[in-house]
Image (tube, rainbow, N blue to C red; front, side, top):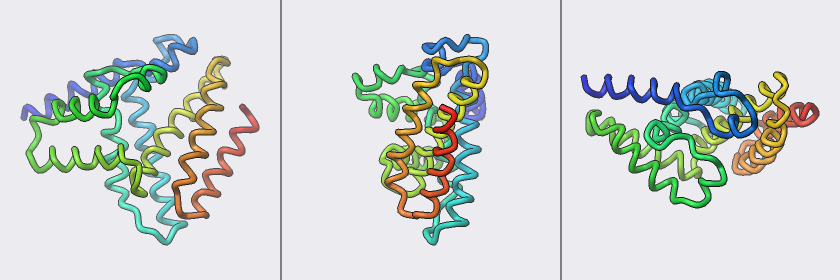
Length: 195
């Protein structure tokens, strides 16, 4: 049962790591989104996006895989912390995250560990529908929190909201299904009016 204890420790740790971008923009530590809260929001958004993709697109999508990617996408941050965006560009973060994930999952059954590792690599590749929906979910979660903080007088998050609107528009170009792209674009248009 070491794996259960390890997963519990990972979640507790992630729930105590604030996302640094909010703190840098004046959101107090007491109400800054944690990595665990971000993971939960990303997972819920991923679930909704996956269901909508299935509804509107002829392509099939593996919702279990999307949820798995959403749940593990920031797991390495339990050991390396939430690294500021400008620092991410200076280091080989993918290699570091893969090494950390291997350490975090070492107590799991070999097949489960290998499956999660391969799923994580697929997420980082951003070249499958599931990985693109996961990345989209991650960015929408951050945009949603930026909007939340804007509504609560944290005006320094406005620039981040604009950044993520543009980032999401870039990601949408990778989505083959026009109906799905249009749907998400319409949400961005609504948000853009407020920002």
